[in-house]
Length: 557
Image 1: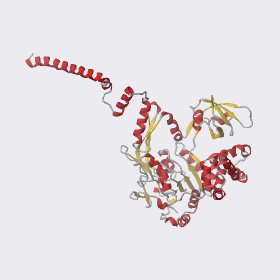
Image 2: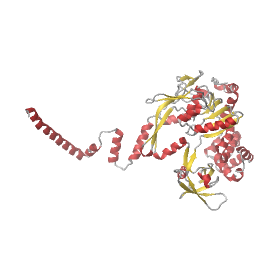
Image 3: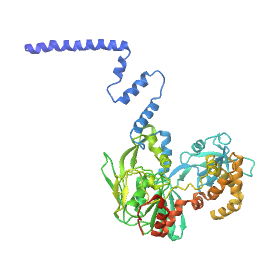
Image 4: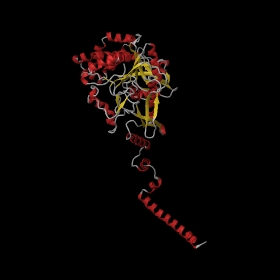
């Protein structure tokens, strides 16, 4: 062994011993200061985990780490964009059910009147109908819980009635005309959630379809409705997307495909880490030969805007109504441990002309969602000239017309919101919910007679002859809204129609509700004229809109 090796043998143990001694001394001092253990427990990791670990170990009060994690995740996502959200485990099912197109329950539609849950109708061939539940039954107990006369929230009733498919729920009901409670055991089953509110012939050769969302089942529902209307002579179609907040991107693409011939661009998506993906139409389509009018408003969003944009940019039909919401972001939902989930914005979608119609969200979530209210304040819902768009984001449709991005879909025909019946008296009635309350009470009190009527038109005529408006006015007075003859004269026609529609809904659901309600719908009336007469209707529209100096051009003959 040479001298150098001998020195190494002596020096290395000395250095190692010195390091150990120094480490022990530092450890003792840190331990005495109260933080030594924590430095040993918490290795260098991400900041959020480090803070949560320290809070869990040393915070002065007892806390739930799980709740802190949820708040932290939610806060992180809120700082991205308005549509990236955290979904707690107990809310995931409720968020997913509408998009799935079904849920597990007992199959009843009910209303809550004076702390009494009253069955409005049962789903045909559903669990409740098979068990013997009938319209007009009052729910008194669900399992062992009393749900009558306790000021119970309607959501709490829904939670008790929902459950896993195949499980049993016991209900006790009071049926008018019977003294004792009736007991039922109901086996929960899958209950459909329909996306098509109404589909009927609104005029000769003109069909009307109202879509409330884009779920997994919506495409099949739409094709079925269109086939039914074609058998009734439909050659032109009005697709009502007002109030439709969107849904599944794929479903919007599939329905747009029913209107476009082969290899027309419907939409494309692209994100920072997601390459461009194009969606094209395929050969064939149920509505290829139909003239098309699409109704939109300020609450038409997301997948609804994809459909409207595809129709507009391909010069396939007219867009009628008011500027849409302006959501051009695509979310992807991912599960988290414990059953929770989160939706993360992963791309933007672009209409065929290349425009992203996403409106700005730089000033935060509150201003973003409140922007629709600001449109009303600034007069945008009443006058097309008040609409403020980013004119630098202009694009061309296939036919060369100019369209704009950055703030929703602009309609080809602007129809202002109809406020002609909105008197102070009308406002007070709706503020207290008296119109729908009285209609439900009227339907419930006259259920024996009304249930014998075979069509919604028969019922509408019966209600009209029964002076229902006068009865509602007296009901309103008894509930704190005094009669105002001047206002009532202005609002009477609309109120009469709405009362008839709400009564009909209790027996014929939305299939009867919308055909009655739509009689008083000014935007739909204009859409029928545009759909029916083409350029003639457009010329008429220009004359009516001369005060707003509209310079829009017609899409089709």
